[in-house]
Length: 89
Image 1 (cartoon, one colour):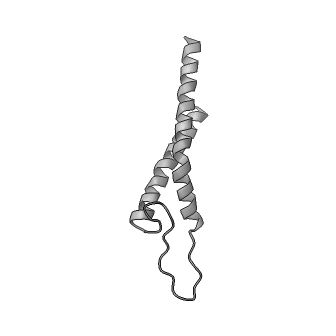
Image 2 (cartoon, rainbow, N blue to C red):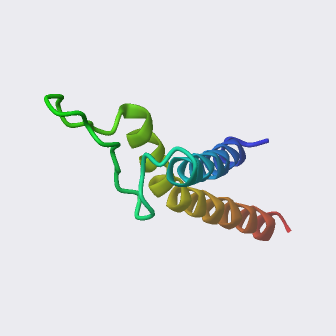
Image 3 (cartoon, helix red, strand yellow):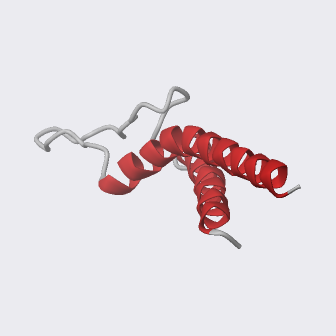
């Protein structure tokens, strides 16, 4: 497998995994609302406000960035295959 294929497979895996995590964050763990905004639990009086941690931020970033990266890598892979097929035939 070429490096582009591995990159595409990795990007699609990150895409699927991050969307699964987003589903769990919204529907099971309730850390995020339906618009993927951080929805903290009620904070007891006298405690600092709760902020989204690195795992939540990273999963949200992956869910946003993985789809376009996957599409671009798929397009590049298709273009590369067509170019090599037309020049070798």
